[in-house]
Length: 312
Image (cartoon, rainbow, N blue to C red; front, side):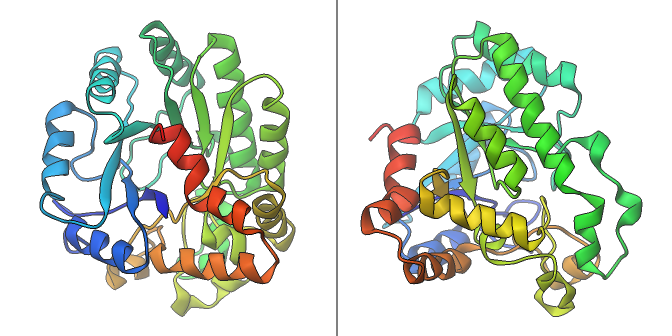
């Protein structure tokens, strides 16, 4: 199995987790590959740091460690990560663009900046995948979050933030003639799923689904001790059911944990992120109970991702 979306910590965040610990847990869960996101501390936005990151996994056997390289709005930086992608692919599986701020503050939040990024990638001849965290800053309402009431995080980061961000990045991809694949990470709304379906008529777009968006709703977040606060947040039942249905009907391309651990004190202080490796197994059980075919389950847990990102 592949987990295409993890946030292992380490370095300046080693109190949360280390790469070695994350890989040990993933291996115990049955994963053969994990793809680490770039909003580490320091971030994976240059060649030197990416190579240092790989060194953390040296000597660990039985599981393959890969990373996404992070994108900024600096053309020189974009060129550097495109070069290391070409050099190290598939160890570097693709590029990650945060369209809104999340953990790590790597957001490229303005439309013009986002257009610049895809324009530079086009000019550099990048045909790989750009995974995006889609939340539009102008649609966020941080004043609606009530500390300690995690369900209100869903009001602070409403469905419109994801929907409008997905519209923006797909419009930009068309306007710039970006030749690669846009991957919508951790999709959480029926509206965004519909937009992806429409866009697939003329361009390559993939989507990933997390266990928490497929299994839980904002009502579950009312149980404080479950610490179900994440970006994008949990939605209502109609969105949750649409996300789960997308796994069964072939619309979603793969499942991804968005594994993102914090210390208990950090969660109490409002940190967003859910440890998700074992939740992937819960989702697999739920899909089996819903009657998913073996072929479809294999596509969600390995085949589609391996073909696109590993070239298998």
